[in-house]
Each structure stands twice: as C-alpha cells, then as structure tokens.
Image 1 (tube, rainbow, N blue to C red):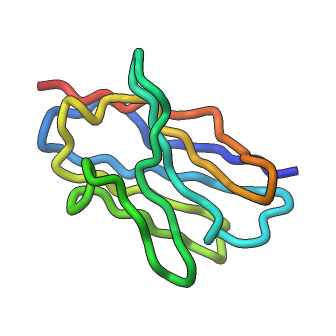
Image 2 (cartoon, rainbow, N blue to C red):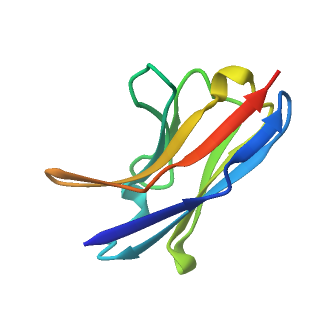
Amino acid sequence: QVQLVESGGGLVQAGGSLRLSCAASGSVLSLNAMGWYRQAPGKQREQVASFTRGSNTNYADSVKGRFTISRDNAKNTVFLQMDSLKPEDTAVYYCNYKVPFRDYWGQGTQVTVSS
C-alpha cells in the first residue's frame, strides 16, 4: 500500500506563487513514478507534471516555463513549484503514484488563483 498526502494549496492572486508538497509513505519503490495532476470544476483530470525515465521531467503545455516538479528522495517527497499563476490554474491538485495496473492518489489540495 502507498499513502500520499498533499499540502501547500491555498488562495493566491494572479502572478503569485505556491509550492505544493506530496509526502509518500508505504511501499514506494521510486519517486520516478510520481507526478501531479489537476482537476478544475466541470473538467477532466489532467496531468500537469511528472518524472520520466532517469531525471527527466514532463510538463503540460499550459504550465511549461511556470511550474517545476522536483523531489527529495531522502524524505520521499515530491514538490510542485508553481510560479506566475493564472486564474485558469485554479483546480484541485492531486499527487499520483503509478505502478503496473494501479494508480495511487492523494486526497487533493485546492489551489485558487484570483484575478
């Protein structure tokens, strides 16, 4: 079993920054299998950022150049630094851990960007 706990969401004005954290516990084999998703009201959940093979990262086009995913292997924690936030970034942000045939999700953290 894997447990994921997100934190760091909140209300911020457009142009501001937030840093989300996701602490993983349990049978986590590699933080390379982790990433961030978001779901805005009335929309499907979408991938925002993730680690790919090795130390590479992948970002949705809508957040490239503004968001940065990083990790602390010693603390089994993944971060999402969000800069230059826009109202359209408003959503519930979820941490995700993928293993073959299963996805683990955190409870989500609300990010609201006011104009």
